[in-house]
Structures are given as C-alpha cells and as structure tokens.
Image (tube, rainbow, N blue to C red; front, side, top):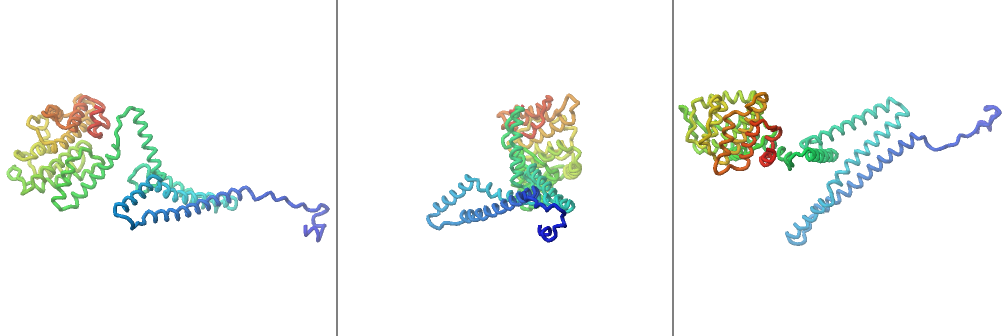
Amino acid sequence: MLIHKIDNTTFGNEPPTLPQWTGPPHTIVHVQAILFASLAASLLSAFLAILGKQWLNQYASTNMRGSTIERSQNRQRKLDGIVTWYFDYMLESLPLMLQAALLLLGCALSHYLWEISITVASVILGVTSFSVIFYISIVAAGAASENCPYQTPGSRILHYLASLAHTARNRLHGAPPIIGWGLARETTALDLRCVLWILQASLDKTVRLSTLKYLATMTIFADFDPTLVIHCFNALVDCVNVTDYTVVLLQDAEDFAVASALCFFNTASRLLATDPTSSVLVGVRRDYLNVFPARTDFYGHRFYHTMNAIHCLFVRRRERLFMEWSGYQPSTHEHIPFVRGMVDIARAGYRKSQHRKQKVPRWVLRFAFHCLSLDPQPPTPIVADCLSIIAIDLGCDMKGIGVMPPEYRCVCI
C-alpha cells in the first residue's frame, strides 16, 4: 500500500488487497503443541523429583524422642506407609515422564524440520527412531529374563502380564498348579553357581564340607554346569587313597568322603542323562579309572552303595545290568540324591530308546521296585521318583515330569 501511495502506476489500475491472516500454519501449531507437551512433562517430572527428595528425607529422618521401641514402631509405620501408598511406583514414573518428554521433543523437531529440509529432518528422525528401537529392545530383554540388568518399569509390567498369561494357559489345559516352581528353578540355578564357585575358590575344609552336604540334598538341577562333576570328583579324590585295590580314607575325612561321593554320583548321573557324549564325562571317566581300578573294593565304608553305583557307571557298565539291590538300605540323606540320579538315567534311556519296547535299564527298574518294597516306606520324594521310573518304563508321557517337585510328580503320575 505504501508503494501504491507513492506510485500508483506500479500495480496498474487495480489497488492491491491485503491478505487476511488466519493464524499460524497447521504444522507450526502441531509442532508447538508437541514441544509444549514435552516442556510440561519435563517440568512436572522435575517438580515431582523435588517432592520425592523431600519425602525421602522425611522418611530417613530419625526422631530422637521416645524409647527405642517407640522409634522402631515409628520407622515401621513409615515403611508400611511407603508400601501401602505405592511410593516406589510413583518414583519410577519420573523416568517415564522424562523419556516421554524426550520422545515428544524428537517427534516435534522431526515434524518441523521436514517442512524446511528433508535432509536435516532425516538425521533427527533417524536418531529418534534408533532410540525408540533401542528402548523397545531393552524393555523386551528385561521382560524376557529377570536376570537381565536392563530392567525398566515397562519390562516388569510385561513380565507380570506374561506370567498371568502363562498361568491362564496352564489352567485352560488342566495342568497341575505348580506354585512358585519358576522361582524355585531360578533359585536352584543360583545355588548351583554358588556351589561351583565355592568348590573352585575355597580351601577351607569346613566350608567345602558344608557346601558338599548342601549339594547332596539338592534334587533339582537347573542350568547345570558340567564342570561341577569335575570338582565333585576332585573333592572325592582328595579324601581317599587306594592301595592294593582297597580304599583307605584319610584321617577325619569320612564325612567329607560320603558327601563328595553323593555329589559326584548325583552330578555325574545328571550329566550322563542330559549329555552322555560330553567331553567332561570322557575326561572324568579316564581320571576315575586311574584312581579307582576295576577291582577296587569299597566294602566297609559308609559310601559303599554310592561308590558301587558310580563304579558301575564308569567301569562295570556291563555288570550293572545284573546289579541286585537286596542289601541296599541307605540313610535318607544318601537315598534321596541317589534315586534322583536314577530318574535321570531312566529319562536318558527313554530319550534314546523311543523305538524300543524296553525304555529303562533293568537294573534301574529293579532299584525302583526295591525302594518301593522297603519297610518302613521311604519318604515321599523317593516314592515319587521311583514311580516316575516305573511310569517311564511303561511308556507314559513324562515330558516335564522329571523337572517338577516330588509332590507334583506324584499328582501327575
């Protein structure tokens, strides 16, 4: 209009018309909305973080008034309030707000720069997409395994939903309610790794003996490390001496020999059932023959029955076909891990002999019948394992039964 006032010939005979402003473009509106949402989320998370810090300081403060009992009760009330009001969930929401704010910022920049320069926008979009994919990956990894260090609130939510779905599926198919069995397997796997580490690193005889006694009582082997067989065998060799085919125990080593023999049989039979061609078994068998020749006599020792079974596994593999169990009456402490190893051997025979009518070695089946005929009746875990051996020989579907606790194996059988 100024130019038209100065020189009205510039635009011809028609005066110019002013365009009517209808507001900012839609792209700018969308970008500004996303940016302000990102800013609001960031400020809200900062505000809640300051409040959370104040709440934690209040919880950690110690009231010096009153007796020790009153101060303890006050602290317990604070802890109960934190649990009741889901304080941990509130604090865990703060990182989620910051992550959402960062995602909104990346989306806003990508949308805004796309209208200006596709090249520049592609860089921002690529970085944002990579971040989203990376975050989804770590959430999935954390949900897949509780041992994964990349735990986030999202991964815990997914893990909880997956456990609910698994429980619902088991109920739908009529599976027995195995309460806490997944946790038991995880705990057992951790225990086995601790046992392996102690046998590798500790030189204290008392600590090693306690570890072997605990290992001898275990009836479940989850994530079994084959090198545990080697350490159990070395523990056995360290407390015995073979002279003229006669086993002589070292001084004050009887308990250590009994525990190490039980552990050696339990782990070796487990490895024989799961991986009979293992290189660890080959090496242990060679070392075993060097220490205990074929004519070695174990009679007179507390671990006679266990060592006789071990000798059949590694040396007299043909003689074990005709092994009799009429005199086998061990203590419960020795019997439970022994029969557990027998179940593993029976399962190994079942996997190898799907096309044959006889699926369980006869010496193992005779062992199961002998244990069931004992008077008084052996404990429930032994009865359950013996019934499992008989069920395997009858051709029953035993998938998953061998890895259940004894009480559930009885229900399934």
